[in-house]
Image 1 (tube, each protein chain N blue to C red):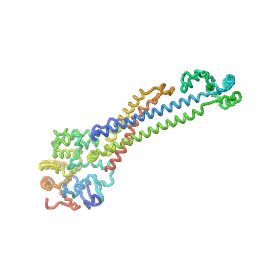
Image 2: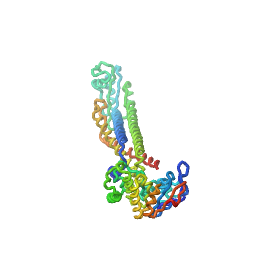
Image 3: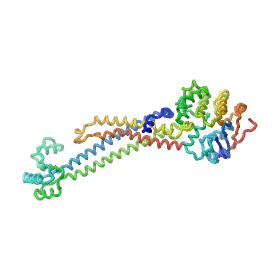
Image 4: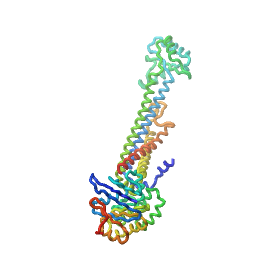
Length: 224
Length: 297
């Protein structure tokens, strides 16, 4: 599904990480953890072709992404749902329109209404459908971002600190939704620095926990 | 045609993806209106000046003038001889001596309408009109030289050629002004499009995040700027035409039988201005959008 082979990436000539290899098999569930500044977000961005590796190879859906055109990247994005910590909505559009945006840009508007109704119900946001993003709470925005990420029925869902701005109860609700998606066969990759949250989920899902630290990616140890 | 219809109708949701930016929208409409206004007047000036010069040149080409000096002692005799030569020349349809009233009318712009022409030593003029086949100008000159050596035959060539040249240059000036207007408009719209793209960098990031292709993102900007330019140009063209209608009429301007404005098929020009503005805006915004999207990769 997504493979990173001996990948190096850095900023300003200094490698942030090097020799990173990662393979996300279909239907797998991964947590990516590590201290702030370790490069978790950068690694995720490589996984959805928002960045290009300085060295090594990134393969998405069996293809080398190194020389993809912008159109090819866009087509790959339609198979990867992304949830950001800051959600990244268009604030002048309603929550329903934001959630339907991937279908809109893909020209699949006919599917929007049915999918939208189901998704709004799934993330318990039906009453807020007509509201603008700034009018929603942090947890509601995160759930809306998750709904937008899955409306195209992607193969992979990548979430970057999805529980960073919400309380414990809301983070558990969000993670439960992600586990539910995984049970539906979706590949899940979640970056988080919240080890307590990972521990709480280990009983519910067969997750592999990776740790990015000191520029290297490794299997998480006994602390979990 | 399908592309044009789809472009004009647009995709309401795609259009809504990019928030309207008030000042840039107004700027684009204003620039397009101003440029269309100027373009209409550049066209009118070019077309009218060209038409006037062409008409004058045509009139002059169809006639010649024989002039007998005013101080000639035997004027009447020379006049009869000259008319006789002209009337017996093959290709001359008519040779008519100008009446004092006609001479007075010719001099009126300089000396006023009450000038006593009869008392002044002014040359006697004979207007010569050729028939369909025309006459041999060299042969006529030779005959006049032999029989009325004082007469001067003017075929208006010295006036006609500069007028034709002036007409061609005026047309060139008109087209040059139009090209400059189009270039300025393209530059202004490109600047506005760049500003709009920069102001909407976050929108572009989100659209890309959810899988929007460049053509979709650019399309939202291109359609908006193209329609604004067409709308603004239509307003500018309408204002210019309205102003043309209240401008002094041809007689008052002394431009004889040609009008100041559009005539006949020339009325297609004002219709073409908004279309041309839309095409300029489409090309300028599309180039700006794709360049910006490439830079933001």
